[in-house]
Amino acid sequence: MMLTEQAEVADAALPVEAFREHLQLGRGFADDGVQDPVLITCLRAAIAAVEAETGKALLIRAFKYSVSSWRDYARQALPLAPVTTVTALRVVDILGAETVIGADLYRLAPDYFRPSVVAKGWSLPVIPDGGTAEIEFEAGFGSTWDKVPADIGQAVFMLAAHFYDNRSALTDRGKVLPHGVAALLKRHQPVRLLGGGV
Image 1 (cartoon, one colour):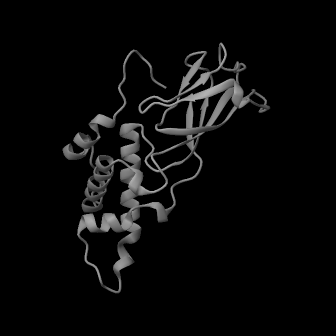
Image 2: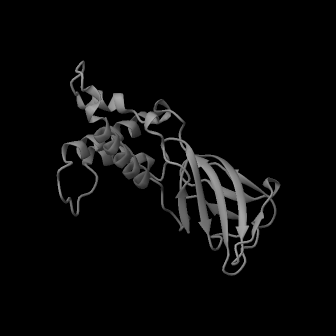
């Protein structure tokens, strides 16, 4: 299985000004924007870490998920939430020939932790030997930062500040998320029960 982000979040969508305020950086100087590339890098790193920890896409964007077999013949869990729409489902054979599956044959089952593509009939389409199924979908809380839950947004700022303060560190082996960040993210982490994973 492989998850591919189709396009990264634009710099303009990142909460750079709010993060600058979180860091209490000076304002009103001619070189106010000189730190922006560093702030953007820290924000992107923190967002990536939080998304990996929670299985949540924070800002909405397009993804492609490829699998070589269905986990369940009638349902395939998706690796990110919240999913807003499934835009395409294709089966690709070993030679690369694609078959587009009509939207009347499947539906999105929304879930905060484990959204799924579910067959409307008995099963999802057969994946041929050596082939794959490709599911294209959009996931995220919204297109602007104010749509991200406040506790997740705070966790991103805290982690980005940690990265900013320790940007010259060569290594941080064995370290887990800072305690405050982990506490804020705890309720958003996927529940792993009965092997119902992706």
